[in-house]
Image (cartoon, rainbow, N blue to C red; front, top):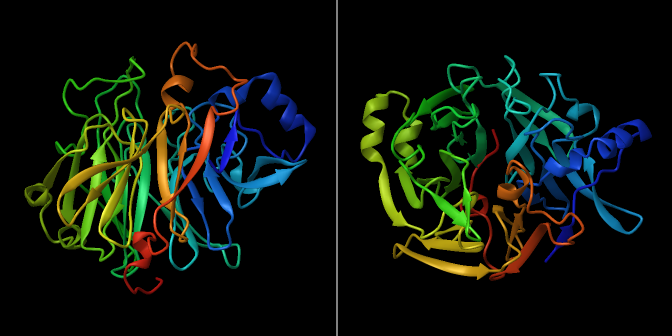
Length: 377
C-alpha cells in the first residue's frame, strides 16, 4: 500500500473554496481514477467531475501537516470549471517517455453535454511545466452528448495516440462506444469501430461486486499498447473479453471504416470485468479485476490469463500503471458504491476507502513506452 484515504482532501487556495467543499459534502463524489508517477517520483491523480463541486480535476499529491492531500495541477487556474480552454473533467491521461503528460479532457461536468471546444487533448511538458499543444476533439469525432472520453495510450514511434470513448455520457441512453485515433503529424482525428461489438457493452450482461449488482453500463474502457507499438489491446467494461487489433490498420486512414472491424481479434475471457489496463515492455497486458478485486495479466506470448494479486479492500480497482522501477501502481476507488443512488454502503471514517497500491514485480519490468526507441513529436 502506497497511500490511503478515508476521503479526498485538497490544499485549497482559499478558505471560501474549502468551506463550500465541506459544507456541501462535495467530497462524497470525489474519487481518484488515473494514478501515475513521473520520472521524478511525483504522484499524479485525476479526479473527474462526474458531480458538481470537484475542486480540481487534475492533481498532484503533496504532504501538508504530515498528511498526503491533493493540490491542483498544473495550477488552480488551470482547473477552473466552466472555462472550455481549461481542464474540465479528466479521467484518463498518460506520461510518455519524453516526460510529457497527455491529458484527455472529457469536457462534460456532471454528465451535462460537453460545451463545444471543451473536449480536448492537452500535451503538457513536465520538464518546463508548460503547455505544448491543445487539440480540440470535435462533436463529429466524439459526440458532445454521448461521449465519455475514457483513456489514452501514446505511440511516439509512429506518431499516433489512441483514445477509448466508452459512449455512456448520456445516462439511460444506449451506449455509443468507439476508439479514436489521433495522428500527431497531421493533428487529425479518426473515429473507428464505432458501436462495434468489441467497443459496446455486451448485450444483457450483468455483474456483481461483493454480491451487489453493478447497474452502470460502459462500452470500451481499458486500453493498452504493445511495446513494439504493433498491437492495440482494449476491453469494454460491461463484458469480460479482451480484444486486439493491428495498429497498422488504425494508422492507415485510407482503409474504409467498415473494413477495420474485420481485423478485430477476440483474445478470450479475462474471467472478470475490467476498468484500466496497461502493457509492459515484456509482452504482458496488465488489467484491473473488478469482480476479482485485484490485478491480472494477459501473456501475449502464450495467450494465457493470470491473476497476480487480490485483496478484499480493492473495491473497484480503477487504473494500473508503472513506476519504471519494477512495480505496478494501481488504485481502487469504490466507484460502484460512491455513485450508487442512494449512496448507502460507505463508512466515510474507514481509512482504506480510497487506496493507491504498489506491487513490485521485477526490476526489469517497465511500461510499454520504454520497450522501443521513439522520437517526440
